[in-house]
Length: 234
Image (cartoon, rainbow, N blue to C red; front, side, top):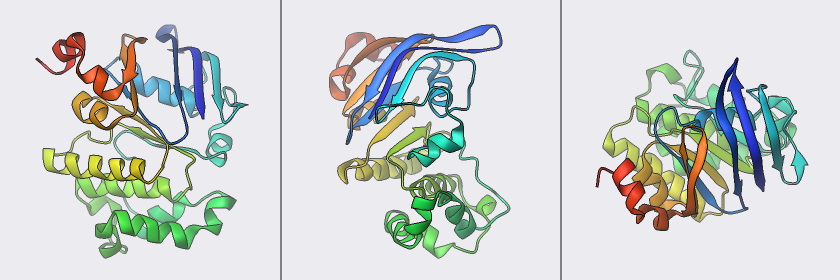
């Protein structure tokens, strides 16, 4: 579904990604993990068209999207939940959700998608008229994921969904991600919480200093001694 080959990306003169390659197949949950500054978010910005200083090949469902605009990429069904949510905090929960259904395809399914989101996040249905900025951190993350699901994603990209959440809310968010995987959704998960991410991932890639240094089945990576020492403190 998504194939990234020899991707280089930079901010100004500073090169962040040094020719990384990875792929996501339909129905997989693929985790891209690593420490802060490894280049994970940069990779997502390049894929989503938010970073123009890049070279390499990015193909989505066989189409070259490397030079497409972000709105065109979204219309193809590649939808990202950004780090730290980026909600419209002065608008209501319902308004934020409705803004997710911005493409013609998503507008046709708005009612069905709302019911799907409420099934995953019943708390949101109870707070439809409440301003998004008044929600708890966990509820805001639920809203951000719900807004993305309103867009009918073919591939859902999640950037650090556990950032700023308590251990209990982190578990809640990851339980929802696991449910989406079990329901057949295709997910690319960027996450600093290596244990949670790889435990449920079909496959994973480990980024260090802008390079892919390890790849494999999620639980196989968790059993690797180098990864245990570097990321799990074991």
